[in-house]
Length: 289
Image: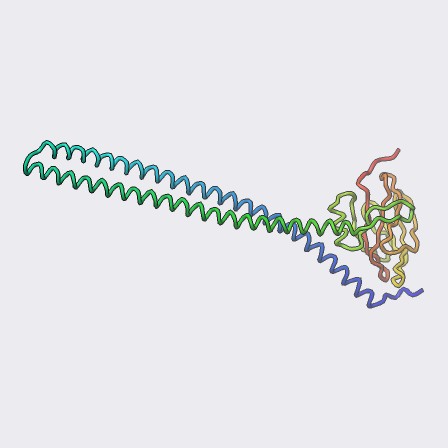
């Protein structure tokens, strides 16, 4: 049986690995970006709300001062007008004409002041409406951004859920129902996010000494890339167990004294003198007497 690696298969496996890793990195990066964007959008909304409230408060204060000043001016003019009219009614001849002229002048000043005050109030009302309109438009824009971010988060979540739903449970070589099996980097990232087990990735080459993976050690004995088969020795609890002629994506199970469930070794790639995969370790670890 030849151990020579098929060039086409090697390139295909390398491409699939690169695509899987790229997809995982892109998915994680998208999640981080979306959460940061949503947090920034919330901060922008809060700042905008504070700015609008401050602007409206300033307008109210200015309007109050202006209105009070104008009211005092109008009241003064009214008082002067009443005094002038009384003087005009009690005066005679030329003096009476002058008093009436003065009263008419005051009446015009009063009318002009009231007109100016009405224009000023109308201007302030227009300014408040403009500020409110601008704030509404900005809040609408922010709301649109928030909706877009929520849509992207929902899409990312849906993609993750679909990835998880595509995973399979199969029976391991010990006859025990396995956990979910990942066949590429994207699926393994989804399993990590579920948080049900711990996962240790490895690239195990053929060597004299075993390689530590998690809390066990592995020694690669043989590979058959044409048939996607491999043989490996597992060292755990001071015991050596040979797992012979195993296939890719097959859960290779073995018992460790501190775990209630079996450990699972899953190999996703078999190359000449090299296997690539991960070790799945149950989180529920207890000591056995």
